[in-house]
Image (cartoon, rainbow, N blue to C red; front, side):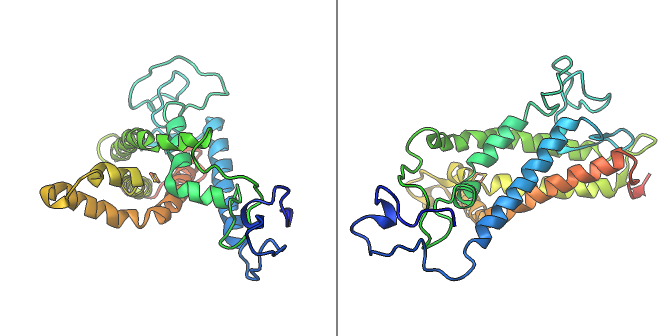
Length: 274
Ligand code: FES
């Protein structure tokens, strides 16, 4: 391992008052596997999403009104005709600005500051610490009390933006019930978009900030039965937050991939109605 067995400052588990064990860990199991898998999973999504956000191809299916979430809402003159559900707000964009520029920073901010993703990348990418009973390579620890990590406190505000983005995605999923000859249509793409947006609602509403907004800061629940009921429901959802964080990364990529395949005529959409 690249990590030092004894830190220069003798801090953390190597401090003078701790047991004199020079090994970084006494664990003999594969403790490095979860952080490794987490890093690979996050890197795969970031790589895929970055490429797809910049390519500007195969993001809209004109016959069925399928729009990939990575390009929604598409509000510039560079967007292909029909894909701007919420109007055109700005002119042509240079290639280095993704067409989904309006929401991508907020989505990135929401996920980066998410309580679950923090745990995930602190342990994996940042190795702080990589696993229980495995010393971390860093010599000092200031938690989230200073820049830049104090910015993690903005998560509650990103939550409100995320609500709006999920509403936009819901609108996209509804307008996608569009037939090739106009009017109502229903295909496999609709199922893909619907499943994705349902899980996105699950991820957004299971947010720890959402749980606090709904039921936090109350002195007693008995005086607030409605908020208590919502808080109870959100709390149940909240226990699945990690699973939803990963599932929605998967469904976002798969939804985009499906729209790409149909939009590029690589496959044709399986149609149930029109
Ligand atoms: Fe994960 Fe809010 S805690 S989205």
